[in-house]
Image 1 (cartoon, rainbow, N blue to C red):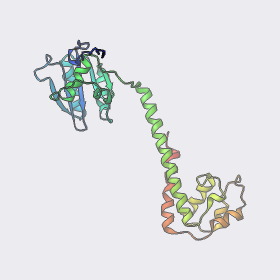
Image 2 (cartoon, rainbow, N blue to C red; image 1 turned 60 degrees about the vertical axis):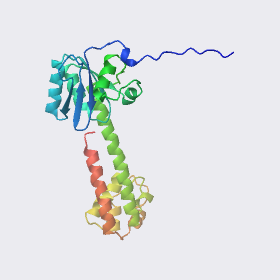
Image 3 (cartoon, helix red, strand yellow; image 1 turned 90 degrees about the horizontal axis):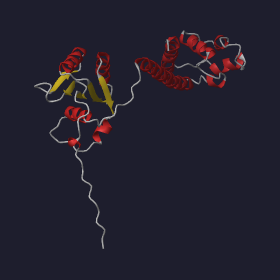
Image 4 (cartoon, rainbow, N blue to C red; image 1 turned 135 degrees about the vertical axis):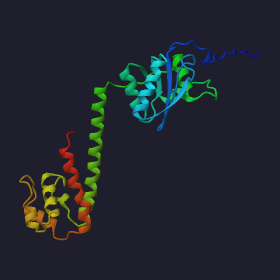
Length: 247
């Protein structure tokens, strides 16, 4: 005899009790922002604002007039950052929500806009705020990531310079441990300044260079292509700017 399976009744998320009655939902775009507040707070419970700073402050003023205390928004792209900072400075409790979490919640009606759906999910407590560090940590993290990008770009430019030197058969990497070392950059700066004498260029090597000056002069040679020099010229300038950067 077949066993009877108990059917579990599906509870719609629209029957859940309201936990945050003063909640608002924000749908952020590149050029326009849609905001939804509880229907009893304003005649027009859904409004759109431009993304300029003045309009973001108007948005915050409207939320205050609607007696909103907490706001939920998706963490898509970087467009949310200015509004997040303004609302947090004013004193709103801002929920930065992963967009995937909102998509995984069932029961959405097709006639409900994104901001209204976010507002409802936030009001019933179905949204979890993502971690956003304090301003001090954000500044340090941004600087660290920027420095990491600069170092990576410097490494890529160094490879371009080495390719240009190889095209001229200027094989400094055989006699120098790093072509971007003090000796390597001194030789390159002299070449770009117009020096072509291998002996004089070899004399620019630091005393720590193990290869003899005769070997360095032999490696340098006299055949220097103007086209390849143009490609190699940008790298010392880039490395100089990177070394002078405060990061």
